[in-house]
Image (cartoon, rainbow, N blue to C red; front, side, top):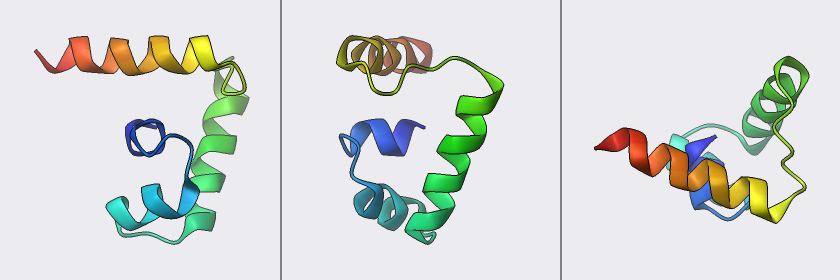
Amino acid sequence: MRAWLEAQGDLAAAAERLRVHPNTVRNRLRAMSRLTPLGLDDARKRLAMIIGLAAEEE
């Protein structure tokens, strides 16, 4: 999720960063969406996720 968010939704860039195929990233995002209501289509929710991930790093 972090790689995809940091790549601003670019599957190819996220896949390259993770060293996996873009379909792998797509499948992982789809699986996460089934498990929890992530709201990946909402820019505000994506921003909140980025902020939350950054806060957890500290």
